[in-house]
Image 1 (cartoon, rainbow, N blue to C red):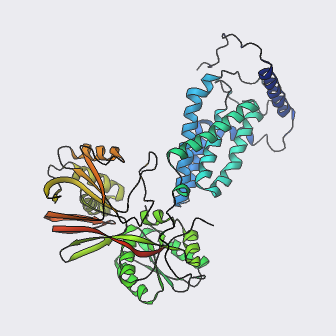
Image 2 (spheres, rainbow, N blue to C red):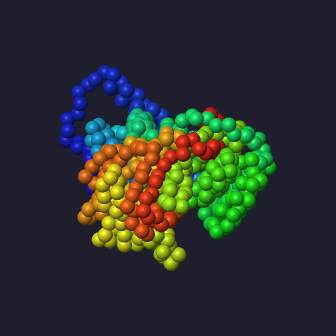
Image 3 (cartoon, helix red, strand yellow):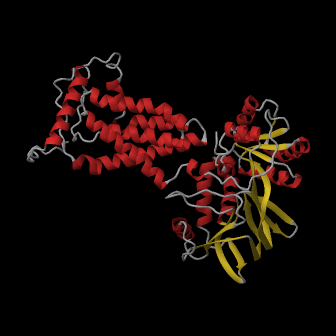
Length: 497
């Protein structure tokens, strides 16, 4: 590899201000080189090398994600995305715009110098940009993790001057660019703090300073039941019941009979069962995320034991809508989504194979089997006309997009069903992909969307599958989807700490 500094280019002419700044930059570099930094010699060169190609930051992102908290995972992803943008900007624009040679290493002690000297141009510092971008990205999502990462990022940036790889101004410019990249990513994909659920409509719910009257039923199959046990540290008088999935409904019914507040820890299917019982008995609901995706808890702003405990202690709660489907004598509620067509087929096929080959391989196999089918999985009369559909999705509340990412609900009491359909036709995989890429478009050749308070489907074929919050049932004939506005009281934290 050859250096990208073309020494045959003519040097720029004299400019008083620029020359003075460059001279100051050189003096600062020499001053740093002449100083003895206690305990830095065995640490900073190694730290600088560990950040080559972003290895240090990818490893750090993995450790943060391993914390198994939603905020930690989002912070890790945001940090890596910010780093990627900063690195791309540095390599495509930064180093080719200002072709500055590296510092002369004469003043730098040999023990500090890197074994393999970089050969790219000096301005700006790519290591500093990556460090600042990663740290800022993490901090914008999680201030706690940001406080942990920031000293490491600062040390990496300083190591570039310490080892003689960069002038101080290179490091400052790289750090500024990295922070700018983190804010640019936030502009494309806002943080959770920027899109908090509105505080209205507020609801009256009993404040439980020590948790007395709260009974939490935890699904042990999710592997997160320990979160419910951790509630005892912050709400010592709360009762926690752990049970297997097949006993959940029975235990929830028992808990609701003696509780002032019904609590639940589990995935969206478990939350659905608790919501139906709380709605029927007129009890407030406290949701502790314990599943994989936790859509409902996430849209409420409940991420962990700390945020739920704070809401329960203060009595902070809101009213939310509940969706309901009815088919003859059969009915059920949903707090997230209800769908007919491809998705229920996928769920059924996945469940058929998951106990044999695992969830993820079963999901892939199910998608291949369903999307290769030649028949339309759903035939309904919609708006008085028979229509073949690959998918009908109804969300409990309007789903939005945040920048380039698929989205969440910003309001859980808007009185609307977010209905999206993928029209039938040849090539289901291409149609579903086209619908996904259509994003917020309300209508396309493959996809249509509308917000309504009630939807009636007729002519549904016998044996058609309907999925609601991950549960699956069979429907036929006429199916009605409707909203129950502000029907359920749910604890959620306020934006104040």
